[in-house]
Image (cartoon, rainbow, N blue to C red; front, side, top):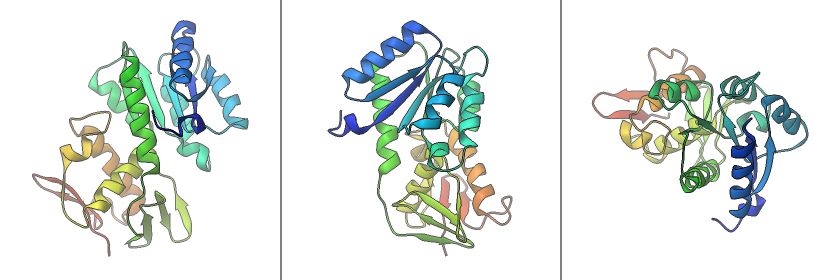
Amino acid sequence: MTADAADRHILVVDDDDRIRDLLKEYLARSGFRVAAAQDAAMARRFLETLDFDLLVVDVMMPGEDGLAFTRWLRGRPGASGLTPVLILTARGHPDDRIEGLRQGADDYLPKPFEPEELLLRIEAILRRAVAPVGRPLSLGVCAFDPGRGELYRGDAPVRLTEAETQLLRQLARAHGAAVDRLELARESADPTGRAVDIQVTRLRRKIEADPKNPRYLQTVRGVGYRLAPD
């Protein structure tokens, strides 16, 4: 665990009392500050008054499920809407993982899981969220600052998920060269590369004048993707 773990605040959202308490205890012993909510409604109340560095969210909850809650979170304005989300669920089929990513989750861990793997995934997400890289890049009417992880269209900020930010940073590091699709997928929730394809599609809608004929976020056949700034 990193030395600054105690400065990181995690919200666990799970309707199962046993799992929620176990997660809270394990993460607290690992050095994090931890709050816990039994459902999405309680999690929303937490988010009205507190800032979190990461949310661990169960999918199958009564009332509003974890995917709907993640979609709601991504619609919030400001930094709160960008808070990284790690989805936990008993539904481990690849299509379920893809759906979680479509709703804006940053990673996906099927139940049952090893607590150590959960901790490693949390650490990886938090590292990616603060990784500083490179100078701002011009992408037509948009600009991406890899160090800050911020995308602007003119003077207006464009909302990015943590996974989208990480993907742009990986491509920015390549300085216009193609990056292998599976290399981009290595730290994603779906190492087959399908998650990367979804993120690329979403990013093109945010960056490109014509997403079907991309100028800046290009496909390199047989390899992967390339970011081609001005």
